[in-house]
Amino acid sequence: MATAMEPRRYSINILQMFKMAGRAQGCVQSKRYLLPSGPIGLPLIIFALAKGHRINTTFPLSSTGPAILQLVQISALAFANGGDNDIKYVFFEASTISGILHASMYLDAVVLPYYTGLDALVKSTFSGECPSCVCRNEDLVVGGTLVSYRGWGLTTFLVVATLCWRVISRLYGRKLGKFILIRSLLESSSWILIIIDCVSLSTNSPPERLMLQVAAFGGILVLICLCVIRELCTRLTHLHSVYRSRTEDVCNRSKIEMTK
Image 1: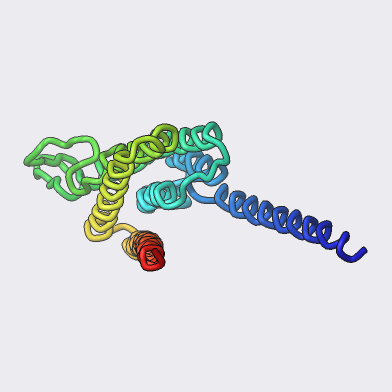
Image 2: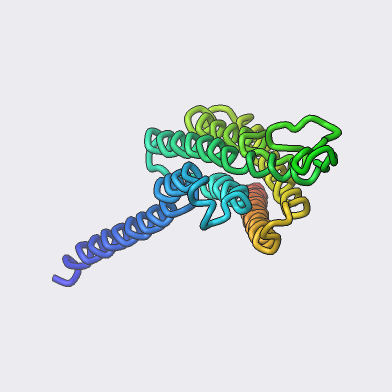
């Protein structure tokens, strides 16, 4: 009787293990939805940037908006949407790409007038002909020349290209190994441009709310360092596992040859 109950007991334990694993995976997936690039956080950020001219009176989006967009880009690069099937994965990645493009466009609508006014104040001098007459040595352009950062710029387009290439690699890259090399190149270039933008904004930021901007971009740099360390640890662990498996294969082959 006991021997007859043992297979049933083992099957029940295995089913419980699968249920627990499914719940853990679902919990991780639900937490990813709350990321800045997820389907919950990203629409809220887009809504805040779209209403940036109204929100800017109470919350300084003109100063912290670039850091928020960089946070979305880092989240999209560091945490891939873990869809169970290809259709779900493509849908989430396409929504992330569209969200990043809309967020960068709304960010420019907030920061470009701010940068233009800052350039007009810094590089303009009173001519003396009248109390409000000013003169400039160069033409005033949209966005000014003091801060070169643009949300709708090369960094955003490279991040979007990386996400698009991830979709292509997910759909067709299983048969073509060269896709992995191009994906790594795009991801590395995206991280480098984000770091350059962050350093440029932290060192060449407008004087208004300087401590807030330094804290925001300093936090972004710390987050980038953590993501890079995690990626390096993952790559080293993968290389170690590959080296160990190959070493075990060589040892097994040598044992087989010795037995012969």
